[in-house]
Length: 280
Ligand code: PAF
Image (tube, rainbow, N blue to C red; front, side, top):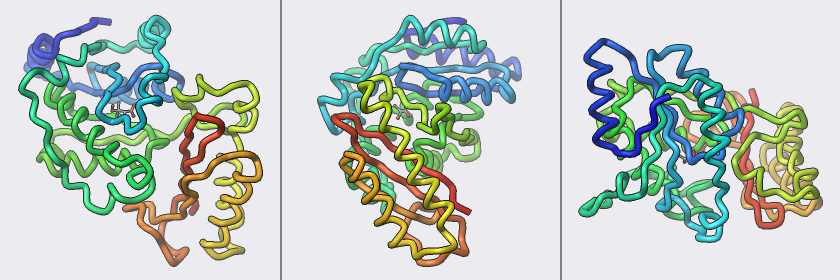
């Protein structure tokens, strides 16, 4: 695996590979890699000739400074995992490579998507995600981009970013299914910060989403959302939302005929977890 720290050196290397007709797959991450990230590397390797992974903890997408301060950093084990997974290139930049002096902050028109769910509870988060992904895509210029379904709203936002920036033709977006622990907990870098007691409670989020899926034919959507919220609260979670939405645009739905997804965000102690499940 070749490690690049400089954006221009990586871009130059990529241009040479593309000139040889090789296809580039890209997996952007913030490190603290787990099997979910490795499944993205595997998905990229299955179709691309060269897989590029980036590790950069992007400060502009953290609306909570404490979350940024405590974001796990596990670079040695990340390197081992990327080697073992057969990743070809790691981009490991300093902040000045991503946001060089003179970098101008843009505003991305994300519309409704930015005001609902994560957008409502993490103001500015998706602008920060777009800012860093826009810059990373400029540097890497991949044919295909791989993102995890666990961050479903982020996938929808980045799809919009590709459209807004005229990249939809040159870069395909591939959404890879969520990887779960044996007890159903969605893999996440933030799981590393759960205490033993919190870790034992954390699968409740997947359990309530699964129950929504199971009971969908029997109850109304508001009833199912409310029952799930109550169950999480009873188990000690502080719940931001449990929402049943249209899978296509994540807005609210009245009917059960269209593809639906249940999404939840809830904190246990100081750790905020999100998850989602396709319902039908
Ligand atoms: O999902 C993440 O880890 C981040 O939001 C991403 C896409 C790497 C941008 O910083």
